[in-house]
Image 1 (tube, rainbow, N blue to C red):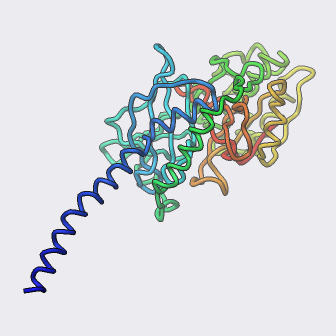
Image 2: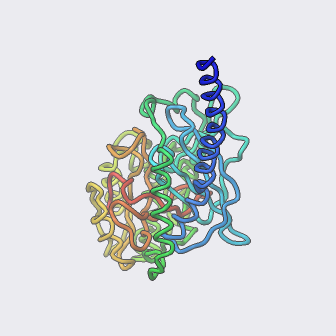
Length: 355
């Protein structure tokens, strides 16, 4: 009889305790700020802009994991933007302050490289958005993130609390640091487009954007009048690339430097500067931007030891967020994607620089 009573008492205690324990867990989850709140804090601390999140949803990575969250937000009454959080590290890997998302909630999206998005189609194909090219869906995937583990709630809360502390610190905030022409939307071209019959990609596109930027804002001898249109400039570069390397796509950074110099030797006037490729460091990049008194450069992002991808994307670096360091803050780049425009990417992301 005593054993039966003891068992009944133990059951009663379990029934009484279980709801309380569940309530505590629920409260902990409820108290954890949302991914959207975190994105808004990061943008405020880095760009001194208050945004209003409007939607969030998950994206796939290159191993097929639902491990990125996209946060859409209003920047003003007429301007929208969005950003991407890597849920394995809880880093905001990029955000755009003046860009409507090029995909919708109904799409299955693979974030298959920094600034590279692919829409999965119904016929086992996918469309790479920045170049509007169709590839097999299987080609998007590899095993590099197969053993992925997502950031714990403790890690998330630590990151969020850090951003909360920064936002309340009352520190003096300054404008983003941009070189001359660093927000000129007419300088944003699109990889793979406007090259006539030539097949090109982001490398030639980045060289074209860099030359045009240097011509418009630093020395108008970089691009002759016969190459003023985007298509003519990119075709001229494609012709040189084909002659020098035998191909116009997947050009290495070293060869992009050679391509830039060859173009300038062939077509540019006096006073232009030769370029060279070096390994990216935050200090090298910051010195090039020189607190806004410097010049743009070409950056290679999304490939190397700091990346999950073997393919990369060439962009033009034009500035950085004030207070940035080698481990925090953002480089500001011309994305080489006309619908995306200028975006902020983590200062540790690039692997090479042409300057």
